[in-house]
Structure formats: C-alpha cells, structure tokens
Amino acid sequence: MDPFTSSNYGMLRVRPRAFSGFSTDEDEFIELDFSSDSGVERERREVIQQLNAEARQSAIGGHNNVAAAMMVAAPLQYEKKKKLRKQASKDTIIRLKNKDFKIKSRDAELFEDDVHQEGALDEAEYKELFKHEYRSVFTKIVTSEEYRQVIMPFLNVTSDQQQQLLGKSSEKRGIHVHTEEDTAASRYSHIDRQARMAIRRQYGPFIKEFEQVLVDFIQHGADRDDPRLPLILVFQDGFGRFVAHGVCQYYQLKSSSVEYNGQRVTVISKPTKVVELPPTSLCLYLKHLKEQEQTLDKTLPDQQLEDEPFLPFSSIQTRTFVRDYKNKKKAKKQETPSDGKVAAQKKKTTRKKRFF
Image: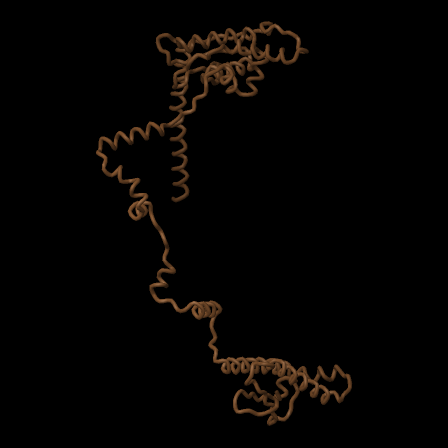
C-alpha cells in the first residue's frame, strides 16, 4: 500500500516538520492512508524515519555534525511534541471511526461479550441472579417433608407433657461441677512454694503443737461465747510467722500479720464457707513424704523428725485485741475528716486569693 496515494476516505494530511522538527514549505503536505488497519503503524513509522533522514541530511549537509543538528532541532522541540500528540489523537479518532466502535470500559466490554455469547437476560433473570438465598430453620420445617415429620409429634403434646419433656432434658443436660478430692496431697499442693520449703525445714514439735491449736480453733473457735472472733498469736521471729501462714493454708484458714502495741501479731480467722479438718495432719503427711524420699534414695541418712528446735509462740486475749483494734480504726476515721476540713479550708482561702 502506497502511503502517498490520495483517497476520498480515511486520508490524513501531515506536515513533514511535525515528525522531523524542521521547517518546510507550509503548503507542502503528505497524505497518509489509514483506511485499513493492516500495516498502518508500520507505514507510519517508515514515513517518519524517511522524513527524519531527509531533514537530517538537508540540515547538516551530509556531515556527521551532531552539534549542528541539536542547534537546529532544540528551538522546535516543544512544538514537535505538541504536534505529535495532536497527530496521535487524530489517528485514534480516524481508526475508531473506521471500526464503528464506541469507547467503553473494560467491564462493559466483558458484559457485552457475555450477552453476545449467552443471550440477553430479562428482568426476572437479573433479579434471580442477584437474589440472596437465605432459608431459616423454620422455613426448612415448613417446606421439607422430612423436617415436618420430625416436628409433628411435638406439636400435639399437652402442657403437662411438655413440662415433663423439658424436665427430662434438663436432667440429662445437668451442670456437672468438678470438685477436687479433699486429700492431704491436694491441700499440701495449695501451699505456696516458699512456704512448703520452710515447712519442710521445720516439721517438728512446733508444727505438731500449732496444728493442735488450729484444730481447737476450727472446732470450738477462739472464744466459746463468740465463735466469729479471730485467733491472735505472737511468734518469736518472722520465720515462725512464715511457717504459721503455710500451715494455715493447709487448714484453709485466713492469716495476716499486723502491728499491735509495738509487736507483730498474727491474726487467724475462718473463711465464710464451712471449714473441715483435713483427713491427715500436716505433720504425719510430712513424715510420709520423708519416708518416700528415703526409700527412693538409700544414700539419705535417717533423720529424727522431732529433733528440730522448737519455735515458741503465745496467744493474746482476743476480745482485748478486737476492742483495741476497733478503737484504733475509729480514731483514724475521726482524724481523717478533720484533715479533710483543713484541706478544704486551704482550698477556699487559695480560691479567694486567686479570684478576689
């Protein structure tokens, strides 16, 4: 196909300087034929290369003078790009007109391809296509014969039969509470690790006598007239108090140490739930553990468990301690509002100074 032949349809008149960047006669044009899609881009590239070669030869006289070519082409560089963009848009318009094609998005093209292949959908088919299918359990019961046969026997029962069935289901489903077996091993495992180590060091007559005091406290209380009163004990040193806290954990009792009359006392009280005695005393369980260790390791020497030094302790009258402790708390409460009033008065004075 000759790109310089004239035609009545699909012709484009192009100035050579639009491609080469060099000025020529304004009335001189080149007509390009874009009536066919085959070879259009290839012909256009060939024409542009030919025009560029001719312009370069005419500008630099056949010599390889790159500087002269750059001096000639530099002033017209912007105009060259601008006209190339215009020419490209014209080529696109002519190509689209020849194809009789409308500019559409990619989604529209895919949709038209689907319609062309499968046929157009009517309104009902579109609604069915975008319909969200949801079927509840009650819908299945009504529509399905299998589910209906399962539910029908329960629809004809009386209220008494219904209550009877619900009672049976609740009994089968009953709540199962896991209760740990009350053993010496389980109680010993609830003691703090450091307290267990201290108890293993002091498992002699001190623990035996202290256990007797705790058993009497659990069975009869610190005061026979008022069993709610706590047990108050004074130990010789901090190690004895620490061991006592561990033994109280074994017997499921609450214990804490407070200051009273310049000395440290231990307050032992019962929890809200009913406290039961362990099946085995702590001293006997410690002996059992020691015997197991000796049977497992024959190299351990036999030790007498009652040869440990005794840690003495004494008790304080519970009623006196409770009365003094309550009076001390009441005095502290009475002192606190007075301090608050003083602070409030200070705030008022500062506000007056600040705002007036």
